[in-house]
Figure 1 (tube, rainbow, N blue to C red):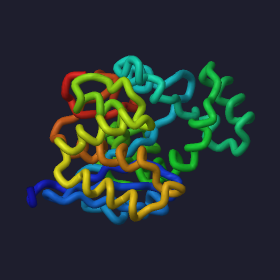
Figure 2 (cartoon, one colour; figure 1 turned 135 degrees about the vertical axis):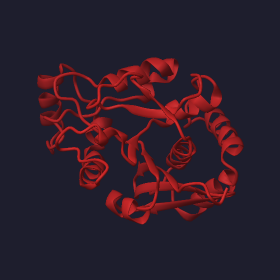
Figure 3 (cartoon, rainbow, N blue to C red; figure 1 turned 90 degrees about the vertical axis):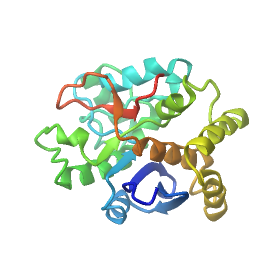
Amino acid sequence: MPDSPLVVGADACSAGWIATVPDGDDVRVAAHDRFDELAETYADAARILVDIPIGLPTDDRRRCDEHASDRLGCRGISVFYPPSEAAIDCDDYDDASDAHRAHVGHGLSRQAFHIRDSIRDVAAVVSETAEATGVDGSADRYAGWIREAHPELCFASLNGQPIAYSKSSERGRRLRRSLLSAALPGGDAAYEAALERYPRSEVGRDDVLDSMVLAVAARESSLATVPPDPAPTEPRIYYPGFEV
């Protein structure tokens, strides 16, 4: 489909970011040191779906995370709750967790704490784009060319139901690769090439799979959201609108 708009699926990894770009029957997978570099490289993209929170909680958990966890059922554990605005700039985990609990009423996971740099990097790019002013709370912050998505919601849409097996397991990885092979021509070869090109210390198997399914979702002309009825200035998570 040479006339298809350029779209990107992006996932944070140890190297920085891994991006998947469908290009007709070809698929390109490339690592980038920084998110601003990734966004500049694909400045002509119609849409970039990224597995990172866009918009942080202030006084309660985000509805989108709770809805995503509910929809994923047994795989709801793959959804973790991002740091609050009060915690995002704390450099010490205990300080961040205390600040988060004081404002949101829940503790902060270490996994969420360790992605704060990636959250800030994406937020900076989102705020700088004409489509997403961000600072004034504009709805465009959540409906611009860079949008938050969740890989497991996307895989669940492709599969018709949440995948019970973790993608870190051989069975779970095999099932996800099978779904991608059907949805993304050239994806299987691109997956193998990416694993050969980048060491596991920089780009994990899961990172490549996640960026690929986000790229599949990004091609959809219409995307569903959780929650399904977000307020104009409320964070939301996008996924293909197939039945889950």
